[in-house]
Image 1 (cartoon, rainbow, N blue to C red):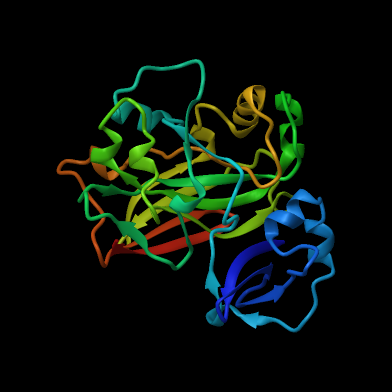
Image 2 (image 1 turned 30 degrees about the vertical axis):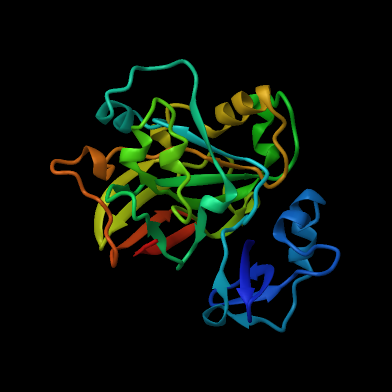
Length: 277
C-alpha cells in the first residue's frame, strides 16, 4: 500500500494513494498518517479504504510525515561518496539531524535561500519506523520498519562548511524533499536491492543500489536505537551516493527553474523544482 499526506482545499488530510487518486482516511481518531502509525492501525485502515476518492491533481502533497518526532540523516554511507569527499573510513555511521520544518513535499519547490548559491542535491532512500524499539537487534530490525520513501537531502554547502557540524547547511527551510508517498514494508522484500537515481534537468547525476551501502538498514536501526528509542513515524534518511554537485568540476549547483528527480525502485519518483526563498 501507498500512503500520502496532503492538503485538499487548504485542509490537511492523509490517505491511500492509487494510480492517480487518493482515498481519504483521516478522521477525528486518526487525523494524521503519523497518528495511525503510532496507534498501529495503518494497515487496517488502508485495508478498509473505499471510494469516494480525490484526484491527485486536486490535492497538494505534503511531506510523507510532515512532523516526525526525529529525522536522522546518515552521511557518507556509500563508498563512492566517501571517497569523493575524502573521508576516512569509520566503524560507525556518521549521523546528523534535520528539523521537520526544513522539509518540503513532492511537486513542491525546494528553496534556494538568499544567503547562498550553493544548493546541492542528495538523492536518498528514507526508512519510516513503524514499531517503537530501543536496542533493536539487527536480526529484528525489519520488524520495526513501516515502509520506505524517497528523500532529497538538499544541502547548502557553504553553510554546511561553516563548522565541522552539518546542522546549519542541512536545515534551511524547504530544502529536504520527502515523498511522494510511504510504500509499506509488505510491498518490498526485506533486504531487497533497491536502485537509487538522481536526475537534474533530465541528466543522471547519481546512480547506485543499496548493495553499495557501507552501513545497511538493519545496522543503522540497531546503532541509532542503541542511544535513543525509535518511535513510529521517526525517519532515517540512509545516505547519498557519489556524484553530488559539490564534488564535480566545476561544481554543479541547483538554480531557480531547475527540476530535480529522485527515483527509488519499487517506491517511485520524488520530483521538485527549485525556487528562490
